[in-house]
Length: 250
Image (cartoon, rainbow, N blue to C red):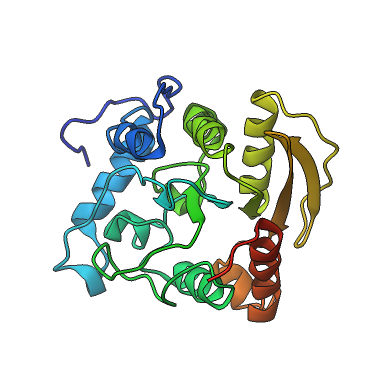
């Protein structure tokens, strides 16, 4: 099936880039991106075929902007938007099981105002925290390819560069986000000794004359939460540690 306004190629045509000075301005650029033809086609196809439970809803079907404080002390990096979650609702980690797990944990750690995130109009606010993802568009089978990851990487790098003025803690949800985060930090000139990704993996480096911590966590995907690989106490410990290290108090 062909979809209007889409390029025929199945791989990323070029890398994204940005000179935005603030996170809100960067979000505007991200939302308008059409760099990766396969992802553009998929996100728009999903918005037409939909899931039966959401057949009467209008899908966001665009790249996902980051969400939260414009001057975050904690920056959370995920993998990519869910096809019927964030790609539907327009907010990262919103409208699916992964988001339910994440926002409940953030709320318990004092990093979110309420424990749910269901829509752009639900009143959710993050406290000194921002959430982004390594790839901004929903990928088929939740698996972006290497070309798409690399094409989107400049957006993540620019987000980190802007946010680094205030960030004390980065939390990477899953190995894909962990590796993407480390790659962006190194491209920005930071040097550090890192460790292999695992739940609770941690290292530190110096940024803007202060100690900054990177923490790894299993992604709150159904694959991890349904099997017990990730439990609520495990996720809570990550974000309580992040809040304490960053000095975030509600």
